[in-house]
Length: 393
Length: 161
Image (cartoon, rainbow over all chains, first blue to last red; front, side):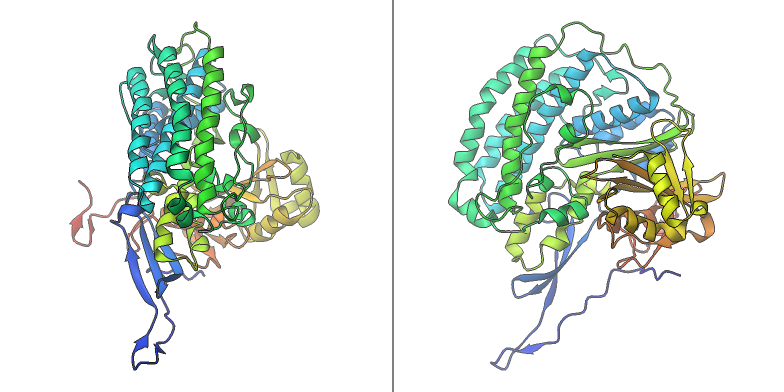
């Protein structure tokens, strides 16, 4: 029978070494977090240190665990799960809703009309930009660059304003429903979004001048926390963290969902411009250029979006999927978000599992932080861009 | 790119007929049921065999079937080079749910298996860091089992609010 550990693993430190001046030195275990400004929430890292070098890192998670999956099983309606999925990755709620809605629509074989699809894609890409802005801003903040953080938030606010006009909420929207949308977008949605796209494009260049090519920033992030592509795939890392390792892998292209096959855009991958492929800087710059690609998608979608169409026409009166199960994955700003939904032909979900990208991406942390400095740990955690609401679910 | 029927045939040719069961008359995607003790060899074969190359474990989820008194484990596999998907299922009795770990084959399974243990009490033989991941180490019971009763007190704190 398996030996299950009831406690955390025992730490074995190397024996004390004589430092030569009558003093002895030894490895030390310190806790980083759970309340630490760089951990983006409540993550605890148990670090074994040799001087300032990390020899072992064990992440401890679960501080935000509220068992989303049990909540879903307690709902007597599949629609009631939507606000809960918002609260997983709370900085990219639109993408979470989109993934859930698509999974349910595939399970129930619902076709939504083009207007719904286009609004969903525009919303999802705006959300991707907002999420990447937050990731970039806080990453800079972790390294010590305060100003770019504020610049990023100015732009993010503009996106949240667009969302607020459409859904009434700024963070957790409950906007994308199974089979449609909560309501149609306001009349000035197109002009608002077009104005944002126009004003935002020069800001990317500004951000590059301010942060991406800043000497101090490059020194802190290049050649730090290198994640080789083979390791990344084996650990199941996805999203910008995987593309930072030079793997051109994007579910919007490689396993298309919704109407992403109708748009022209590039998959950005890290090239090791400042150091090694797969270092923190590569993961960072992938996010910067992905915002540009999202702008391209939004522009095309705004051009092609039909003005007619009832956004609620495909919403079923009673959601009672056929007995069966589905695993459906979509690309969120953090990577592959999969929903594994089992239906027993009733109105209550039998099982809803979310394969959260942050959860999987975080699991690679012990592998890439060996040999790093303590200060580099901050950069590595920031570059993986985790949201603890999603890690702990 | 291979369909589930082709993959099923490849697996039965390699390991024998009686170990696998193909479920086809289901919505969306068929799945293959594998015997618990075989999962490790089957996984290794699926990952390394040319033409199959399932190098990515997308998702690993536990399921509790209270009517049958069984626990299930679902593996969603994907091949980044061949672009095919496969769903494997393992069904185990509720009171003795254990199977070999696939952590050494796909590192994704490390945390996912710990989560399945945490939430369902499925034990993984040979897992290098077999302990709870989301709940505290000394939590009682397995929350995602359908018959789960939350404990009244945790370290002197009332749990139910």
